[in-house]
Length: 441
Image (tube, rainbow, N blue to C red; front, side, top):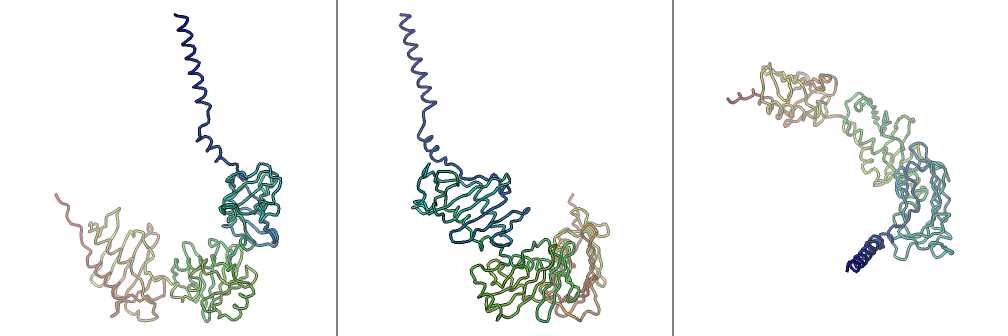
């Protein structure tokens, strides 16, 4: 009986061992699906910075070769042009990695059915290690959501997603830098805007800009920065024929000539307008071009702005920083507010914070509605604001008028016309300054 029990136990153990082995080594339907979905990568350049040369060959067009130079790309063939960095970046992203959707054939003897015997386009990539890879792209797949591809030297035929075509199938026009002024805005030191009867010269200084011509003025830094952004972002319209653009430019009305000086020298842009279209001739780009208004939507408007549009209308420059001291003098009303931490003091006495902050807001909102050339003869209000840890001291004098006031800064000969609502806000805030309420026991 004992021997029979031993045989039964051994048989049970054998069955359990077999079941365990089968459960550990069997392939489930999910495993089969995962294996089928794991398709090989056609190319992996490891990092976009690893690529040194790109060549795009489109059927019926000369090959376009791009070479990396530091952080920039340059088109070296068929002609020398700066390359569009965003377009090149999208190409490198598509190649890092270029994955297949599936393998159509492991060893394709006839490539013609896939359009690969005479590819629609080809992309060659050279990396830092000197390795060159040729990628061939043929017809679209029957479903239309991909295309056939092959890596030179690999007998397999793959399908790749449609985005590979949109990202990699680029013409010379697609790859060229279309900026009319291919200058980095951060390197610009001056802008000279010349229009009929007017010349405005902006010079970059520490912390902003300064208007040098027609005379010295405080600028609105945001407006000047916007002008620079529009100028350096303006692109030529690739869909417009160069010959047609030259004819339109010849008959169009001159709008402005702009000279931009940067670390690489000075570039000139001559802009003309014909109805709602703008045309330009740039010293940095050969030819005459129609401006792509989608790339620089307000360039025409910015070039037509008056001098006063670029001048700062704010009386004080402390902006949204918290001033440390405010001095106000007007007839019998005279006081000083000094900030200590979050508290305001006047002659050592704690003041109501809300009323003091109302004065700060009113001073911050002092802005001209216009500029005038006369009427400032007997100022009666004197305000000095200290900010930026004592490094900025601004003094403004105001002369009330029936329509508001005329003001002048100590360091500026400009006369600022303020409307009555602005002055009423200031006088109301000044009148509301009061001591802090006694602490409750």
